[in-house]
Amino acid sequence: MSIRQPSSTAELSVRQKTNINSLWGKTVNQSIRKTSILLLCAVVSWATFSLIYFTTIIERRSLAVASSSNLRLPAPRDPFKAPQGHESMIVGITTHTKTVEEESDDMSSDGQSLNSLEPITSTDDSEEDPKEDSITQSSSGDDEQEDVPEGHIESNDAADEHENESQSSLQNIHENIEQVEDLVMNAAQHADENEKPFAIEKSVLSDSVQQAEETCDLLPLNGGRYFWRNRQRLVDLDKTQICGPKILIIGAKRCGTTTIADILLRHPRMRFNSCDLKNTMGGCIVGWFQGALKQGKIFDGDDFTHVRRRMSNGWLDEFGKRLPSTDGITTLTFDKSPSYMDISFFPEVVEYAKAHLPNAKIVATLCNPAERLYSEFHSLLADPYEGYKQLYWDNGVEPPTDFGAFVQLFHNEQICSEKEGFCDTNRKQYLKQGDFLHNLRPWYDTYGKDNVLVVNMDDEPSKIVKKLLHHVGEDLLPESEYPWADVAEPSTTNVNPTYEGRVSSYQYFDDQMKWLEHYYSTQNEELAMFLDEDWPRKWNCRINGDCGRFSW
Ligand SMILES: Nc1ncnc2c1ncn2[C@@H]1O[C@H](COP(=O)(O)OS(=O)(=O)O)[C@@H](OP(=O)(O)O)[C@H]1O
Image 1 (cartoon, rainbow, N blue to C red):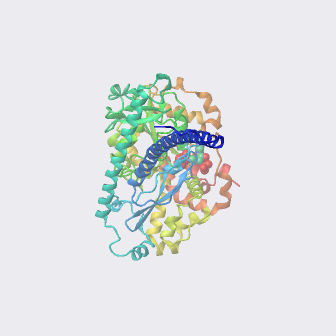
Image 2 (cartoon, helix red, strand yellow):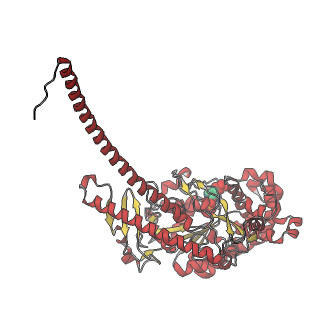
């Protein structure tokens, strides 16, 4: 085959150009192809990453959803100075409003955000908690029901079934995530030692648990536990029990329970939280568990709380998973839940606690009950979601916005005669928490006098610390190991030796304080006799005409 020669210089130049163009075209094509491949790789990587990321997010959200079929009041909060508020729990078409103490948790001071546990809607709560007579008919409930077309109202059974289904699919998602995590962990294990993103500390948690059996009350731990700390996955799946809290700080709410917890934690033998907040890079489920470890609230409801009942493997297990490992001798842990002293609301709390932690040391902090109420009301006001108003709205009552109106509603004759249920609930919710003797008696009866310490929060701080350590036991919390210098510095311990925080405001509510003092005076007197101490009588200062620092 003959090759045709170019017929002219012009044709030659055109052909050369064409050759150059086709060469150029080839090069461009190759570059495009390479770029496309690179782009494709990037898209695939991005898609894979997104899939894992969103699946994780969905799984976490779904876990929260699983425990509540109707979420209300999305309430991101600062866990470390979180306002004290209320949560509304829709029970069928009834509305249940109760202060939730974990919201008021303000023990720590670093600033991670808290996606707090949402209130639970439970279709069977009303049956499981018949005792909670604060469950009141929602005025809006009927309207809501009318608006929903027939057949759209899920029956309790259907709702349960639906929830079971969603829980099992969530379980699947959870298992998938675990598998992905394990793959990553395996890959990480085989990677270069220096570049390993995660390390596994296998069984670091169980070191002391074997010997703990005889030295502490063990809580069940079905399925072992794991959590993340400093990008390390701490695993102990074989463990079936864990040393429970040795100390229960039971309240009274707004009487310095956080201060007592803070004082305790300063002892080098005290442990508090597996998910060390300051070092956590993620992995600890932020939110309820962080709060929970400060306020376990494990014993204040059925199985054990109205909030956590829905968790697939039970709240006690979830709680146990995040308890620090202690042996009950050289290391101890505690649970601070002011709801434990709210016997009117949680009548079975003592029984539950005794069943699981028969050898716990009980600590109650007490302060002037009228002042306590004042403090509680102001912590309610600080809740940006104003959850406390629900109780009033549900009963067609104008929510109080100052302490005067708040106290008035406990004894407003007209409202109380027209809305008897409301006044009972309102008193039970707030007023009765100050009936200290009534709330302490079951603890004394169940645990015995020697195992219950009542702390007068007006005492001098170092005296409080000594009593506290002595109560738990010199062998467990030796005084010699306590950092006494810390107590001398009020700002570090939260203990204010000249605590008069609320006093200056009382002058504006003298009538209400007098009413409260009268309400509490008999209880205070009985408490003084019961404890064989004089200080509870000082809370009756307006009646006794001996108010000292209150004499404005
Ligand atoms: N030593 C002492 N004596 C009396 N009161 C004290 C003491 N230390 C702290 N406080 C005050 O206690 C209030 C917080 O109480 P709690 O930590 O128990 O609150 S909570 O139940 O955990 O929400 C909170 O009250 P308010 O100042 O009214 O907010 C603290 O100031």
